[in-house]
Length: 157
Length: 157
Length: 157
Image 1 (cartoon, chains in turn red, blue, purple):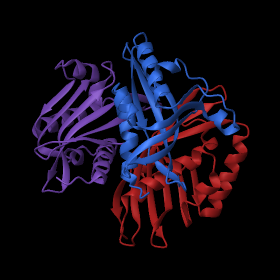
Image 2: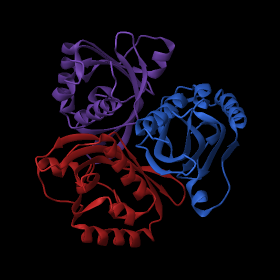
Image 3: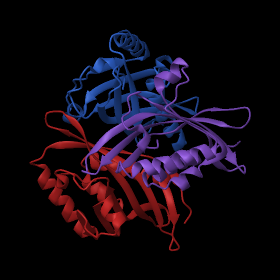
Image 4: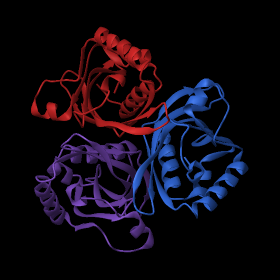
């Protein structure tokens, strides 16, 4: 696969923007039909512990999860802001897939208008090129810097 | 217009760097001669409420505003740090203008040396190409995640 | 030197990622054989005061420093997250070297799992092209927004 690094910037930019705008259906289209989405503390990942906070195997399961988040957010009204740092290509796999990384900070603003740091971490994603061009997320691994994220369910990361 | 996505990265990078360095005159040159600069809470924007915290119609008005900020900053000594996330092209308009977005976090350090999160939000800008090449800001819409920004006037965003 | 702006994004992305992963030996390879690494408060820099918090002249001195950080981190267990904003090319020097800048925020997570803003600032680096292609850091100047960084030694920036 010929990699366009700008496509990588665009993909991560869209990822964060669509989540922050609450456009979850559009966000889902960034994923490949067969995909995995995992949120786990960085420490668990580094120690090889399998315990994930969220694990979705397949687009249908991810859609269900998004629907549940929507329901939950009716009672936990807030807005999110993803500030995603510079992405990098870690490896190009033999099957043409791409291992990429980008750090992130997510800020949350509550109904009183107070904005707080919500979470920081690292995306370690595997990408595929759909139709030879557009990049799609085959695997999103969201590594959180802490295991102590409050009210995690209310925020897609 | 043929879009160079790197020019987009460069424009936002300059935007933040010039503000943080207090180089307001150079920052003004990033704007087109005819321009608009608006700061408003995201919520107002989404609800279609017109109430802006700052609204400048034209470069002269923006220059006046910058001059006022300079005066105000003599009494509120602090430094800013814009961390602007990955930008994306939202749409290319029929007239050749470009709708772009980038999320941001601004941190502020006071005279005691304490650094705090000041504001997060989203730039939704309209760009034009000056002389067919260099991008300029025809419209800067700074959407704040909160309506409760303290001492807003002292900080260009 | 023909500048590839994407190489600039990649270099800063690697810089932050390798530090956050604790891969200090790999991080050192981003520096040229002859290099300088300085951390100083922005205020000192702007006033022309020479006082640096850390100053390493040459790769060997930087390696020593990294080794000392490793020792110190055995007693101050935490993890870091660099969120580096959009980089820009400030100038291309007559000798082919490149002056570049990027803003950053570093977040730190302690053993209790609490994540806090640790420091914000600006990288003002001078880069050279090794073998005419790969960018290397000949001079890293880390300008901190505050002079009051707690437990600074425990965190490479």
